[in-house]
Length: 248
Ligand SMILES: N[C@@H]1[C@@H](O)[C@H](O)[C@@H](COP(=O)(O)O)O[C@@H]1O
Image 1 (cartoon, rainbow, N blue to C red):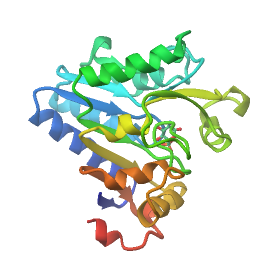
Image 2 (cartoon, helix red, strand yellow; image 1 turned 120 degrees about the horizontal axis):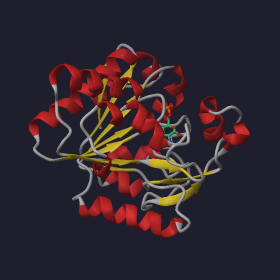
Image 3 (tube, rainbow, N blue to C red; image 1 turned 90 degrees about the horizontal axis):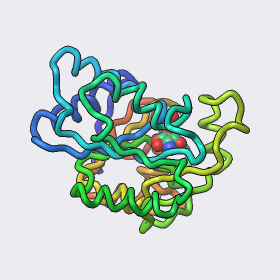
Image 4 (cartoon, rainbow, N blue to C red; image 1 turned 45 degrees about the vertical axis):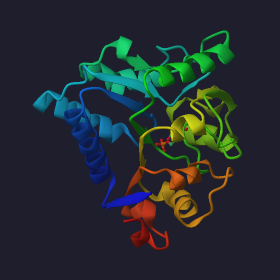
């Protein structure tokens, strides 16, 4: 696992966007794993600016999002589908046929999970997976204790995750209690992983990730064994991490 240390959120966003743009320019076909949350918003803004300025094309991209809340429809303002549409998809040349986000409205959630996993497989897997990290080490919505072997599945959200995400809702009661998420194995199988972390809120998570053990009680820790994983993190997020230089 390699770390690229940057000054702040703006630099992190720009560096990650450039990373993705380079891949877009150098490959004829690209399967991108995308994330939601506050962390990647700046990356998406840079991708949009680049698209408007330089016309970098998304015509050959297929995207798979990490997760979706159960019980929120596509057009619900808090669904991840809506987030992706508003924050990226509507601004670039990507059609709705090219994008994949699990549906949290399917009456058969089990088959939704299986089909989602199969679809990723049929596309030849994910080339680059973009990730944020929860303060308890969750990736996607894989909460502590999730098996490293897990595939796309339904999860119950912890109180801390619901509290962290309540800022987007009117009250915490409105935050769904369940979600569909790509599993840890589904994420780990990506050919390349780019994890972003910015700010004080991610300090504990970065210390546990980089100085702690590989354990299912801290889901992101498995990424340390990935052959091609990079973290782009800012100074504040890395504050307190011992031996950052070992990861350069
Ligand atoms: N399911 C998402 C994750 O994909 C995200 O990475 C994480 C951190 O969110 P943020 O970037 O807003 O800190 O929490 C959410 O619960």
